[in-house]
Image 1: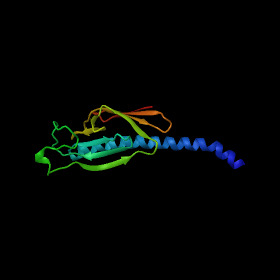
Image 2: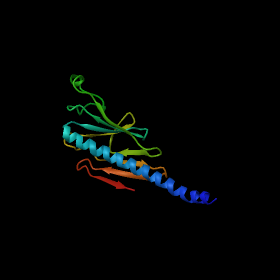
Image 3: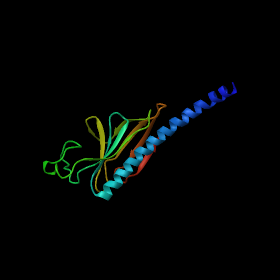
Image 4: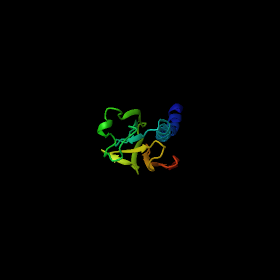
Length: 155
């Protein structure tokens, strides 16, 4: 009986801690993948894209062709003369923890329901923000400054 009472008292705390850990893990992963994409774009001197999929659970980092034509309409398009020389390459794919999802991405480009940001060779991208929904139904926001690379967190 004592064990049952102790378990009943401890269980809500343990569940809350696990939910907080999932949320912190997802936020850290979103920050890390954007920082890594920016750094890699500078080091490799080629564009790197971060794609937030509409399912709200998946984020990918893609290496883009170095001479990507800005006039092309989609993320995956390439100029015909470059089609054989370089292709889009998957660098990293990450699934967010269960019960944590990307609610919205503001300021990013859109394609086929997915949002994406391209970090240019100099590390500059467009500024964007991501709203993440946690298991408790709370929204957390990450703001990415495209010019400086600074990342701010809003609860």
